[in-house]
Length: 345
Image (cartoon, rainbow, N blue to C red; front, side, top):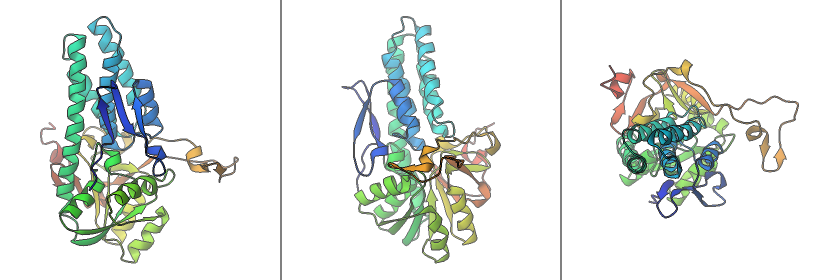
């Protein structure tokens, strides 16, 4: 089974290399990124996407800012790197991992006393975050594989695979680990409008690994649930509060349908995706551009007089979630942050 990297630091380049995800599946391209502005553009354009991958990208982004900073004094250095960090934080407001990765590297960096030591600390911490992410995904996969029947069909939404992490994946990590455990798993991948991450990315990943995958339109999911085709739903998450799971728009619909048809609905996500402070009502849902909905290729499918709404995420209430799969194990209802962060108080 393929375990390729999604993004990584390249010492010879002095910057970040990553798979350009907007070009898949027709074109596999590695981009060299040597500036924070270019990284911010890549994140906004979804060249890099997926909650854990954004955490790693944010971490490497701070390392890149530190490496390229021309400050003469340590206070000036910290201020300039924080300015770049703020730019990166602003690119995707809903996904919590991005800020988590940035803040973790910043916290280690500013404990140093000089620029050279801070630059080294930033890169060391970012590399550690990338390694931890891979280990985390394998642990999530191992725990989640236990939940799947020996022979089953799993529905997933968007892309929570290796492309959304440093490697292996969260929701797709569960599927990969189940197959490694000799279970027979077929996957139904919802296309995930408007940007087709399920059709373009999930189907590409699974096809590379020779994992059986069938792509359906988002509106077909309930039909297949009612037909008895689907045994479980496994999705990722971009933020988990105490009362809701934020994931790609359309996830809430699948959760409702799964509950009606008595199909388990699992969320696979690392602890870094949990937000111990905010509740659903506090979280900003990212609203993306009109063209993502109205246009495919060179064709426009919506008349210019018609209004368009394009929220990137929705919130699924916790009462619709069967279990959350983390690197530390499986969390079941009633969900509480004390289960995730025992030292919360």
